[in-house]
Length: 361
Image 1 (cartoon, rainbow, N blue to C red):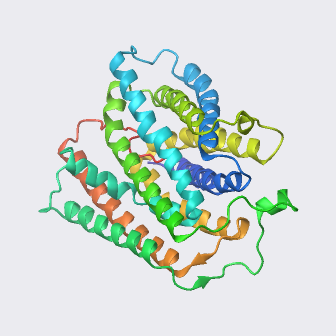
Image 2 (cartoon, one colour):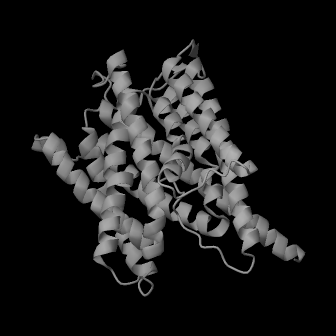
Image 3 (cartoon, one colour):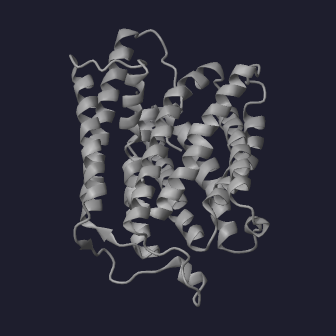
């Protein structure tokens, strides 16, 4: 490869890193802003419904234009798989996860979010879709990384420790927008924290199941934008039905020129639509593992932003637990990278298919 080719390769890699930093920032913004909207009194169910509505409105036209002549025939099987994908990775995950953010803290929920790769490995083993391969270094790494992740989650949940001060002064976004109002959500009791932690854990387990099942969806319908837009559409329908069942006040659905409109537009267009495009592009260029290694960056962004903008108290247990989870995450990802290298070396003449099954949206 000539000098020009190397320079182009370097520029492309820098672009991919930049794209993933932007994607991580938007995903972190989803988590921080969801708590801002909840503090404003917006029900989580309605927030999630609007998120998927705006995500569908953004991704639908893009999917139609980009994959106009590429989409295979739609079947009832694909529709059913899309519905289940939307349930596990869309409406169910979003409602439980963001409710967990409200009841615990943005930093805590994001740290648990990093358990998803380890949970995915456990689900794949339980469903016999992956062998533990304890005789190989990759199998031992994935098992050890999963144990480390679980240990970090336990440390994060059961140990708080002393407060960690990052900023000399803080900004509360809610009180900035409503200087004379009182936040609708104060720091939760131990009971609400336990409920929030449970919801967050279950939501990430649902997401792990979704990632495992998504491999089949990607095989039957290998059009990333169209399948994601279809999933968003199903997720919007499911979320609206759920929101109507749990929230009967019609006034809660009204959006004015306020923080609620900004939050749902951000979550739907930037935090869902643009993120999917950036992650899909990076996964197609460098593979899903490249995308996964940026997950811990979301935790760093959320920890800094929530302590500065939400006046959340950061504890030593959160820092230590998050750090341990990140170590476990990278050990699991190292094991997965060794597996991919083994497969590619065993089938040197084949072009391995790239799916977005490991992308965390």
